[in-house]
Length: 104
Image (cartoon, rainbow, N blue to C red; front, side, top):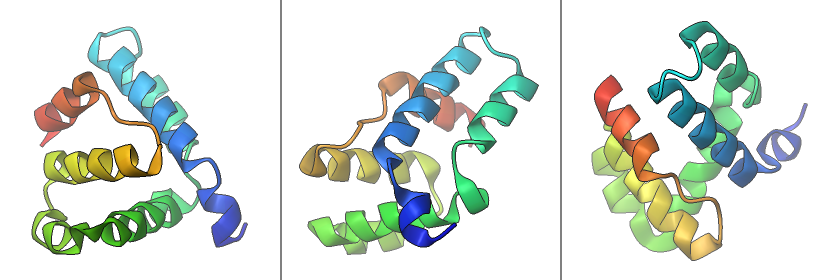
């Protein structure tokens, strides 16, 4: 699988991850099932999709913010959402952000 194939439908994959995470947070999905479904969304450990997202964030003029917040998942998702608004991609829900914050 090449890079372009791996990053196809990144927005839809993020929407699916958002939904799965909400189900998990609401105890409607067990951790094993969540991990199984979530890990199957992103090939190669998610590295191509993550790189694609980082490149889009940087292209939206947020490179400096990205460099100072790359190790903070909540801040990273906030940057992702800012980029997603500009690019017309899926915006991660507040429920998703709460779950990410809980896991930090």
